Image (tube, rainbow, N blue to C red; front, side, top):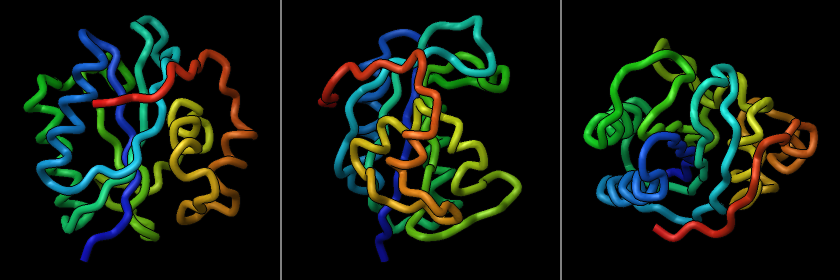
Amino acid sequence: MSKMILLGLGTNLGDRRAHLAHAIAALNRIGTVGAISHLYESAPMYVLDQPSFYNLCLVFKCTLSPIELLHAVKSIERNHGRTDGPRNGPRVIDIDIISYGDERIQLPDLIIPHPRLAERGFVLAPLADIAPDHLLPGFSETIAALLAACDITGIADIGPFTP
């Protein structure tokens, strides 16, 4: 059975728009991409000496289990040139599973929702475009409320993204 999944995509190397469009096309081969947020440009967090990121979020539906989806998005990243690098460092493409239906998942390689989601305006801003009233599993506030409480300095709404 298909569940609503929220994914976050980011890139800060090369042709950032093309990387996002390629990732969305690849996602459409394993499921169905629904609503896509605006495109946001954000300053890097944690590792500051790197280019700014393009970020967006989207609604996704598929029949893969959470771990199968993790393997699929990691394969998409590798096929698009992502290599292992420093944690929070620059990347060609990054695809994060923000939520998977109403499930809370705590596995060695997969934690959903992300434990630091509430501090990540670069994820909350695009999520608020597509699901402002959504309650993520384990949170008592909507995405819009989480965004309102988050510092979004350095995050700019570039406008609609069309793959």
